[in-house]
Amino acid sequence: MIYRENGQFKTSYRADQQILPIRQDRWAMLALLVLAFVVVPMTASDYMFRAVLLPFLIMSLAAMGVNVLVGYCGQISLGSGAFMAVGAYGAYNIFMRIPGMPLIPSLILGGLCATVFGILFGLPSLRVKGLYLAVATLAAQFFSDWMFLRIKWFTLDNASGTVAVSQLQVFGIPLQSDVSKYLFCLAVLAIIGLAVKNLVRGAIGREWMAIRDMDVAASVIGIRPMYAKLTAFAVSSFVIGVAGALWGFFYLGAWEPAAFSVDLSFRLLFMVILGGMGSIMGGFFGAAFIVLLPIFLSQFLPALALLVGLEMSTATVSHIELMLFGALIVWFLIVEPHGLAKLWSTAKQKLRLWPFPH
Image (tube, rainbow, N blue to C red; front, side, top):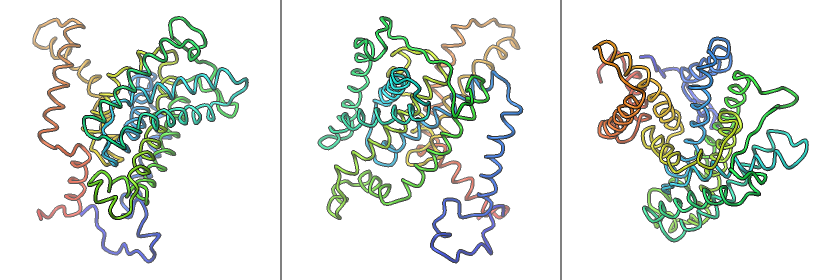
């Protein structure tokens, strides 16, 4: 019984309501933080930072924001890429147009720009829901693509729409190396993740879940649907906007509107569905699946072809990768419709009883 709870008594409401009530979970979280903040920066290679860790952290943050809206509040959104674009371009304009503007306030203000944009396109949720709301949020994606491509003011009058940032620093510490970028993104993810976790456990989180389960019954018991839905859009858009700013500033470095296309919106939605809707942990699982699986397949398929004496071109590997990727998504949804977070929860429940079968 790895998750042995005998003797772990709670003597106050505060202790009973903590995020990690079981001692083993607290030790595991502490070990994970030490691994992420200390061991990984000392041992990981530059390729690992650039190709795996940075996109995983930023996509986990974006998936967390999507999960607030889709998983907790039940509002289907296909405009996540647009919210990321608004956050990235908003932070870029604030950072470049205001002399001496620090990086952290630029990221926060970029997230607030995405918040305003998200509330604006979240207004249709007051009248429509389901697929109709998905179409309304998809309009945000098309509008942002047109806005950043045609209105040259957002790109500092650059005709191509491409923007770039450099010489990033926080409190006088330069963020030029991959290790420093990784640590900064990890710190942002940890802070926002803790804040979102406490939000969904509080009164506003219960209102979101009540709207998701049955909005009519929620309004009957006194929950205001307009307040709940628009706050979900606001919080979700802010988190996604900050993730978009990190994606542009730290991962891409230079980007254009096509970097935040509708494909990115679908990828984020797939992360939430595969990881588990209505679960903070699900965003991390979904991001790991979406980010790591293509890298694994791109390395595994050519090696497998060499073993059987075949030569496989890069284009063939890309096509097979897409087919296997889609097939695995379908298979996971058939095996566990509630996502990888549900499998993790089931495994933890089994460990509570192990080695006993029941």
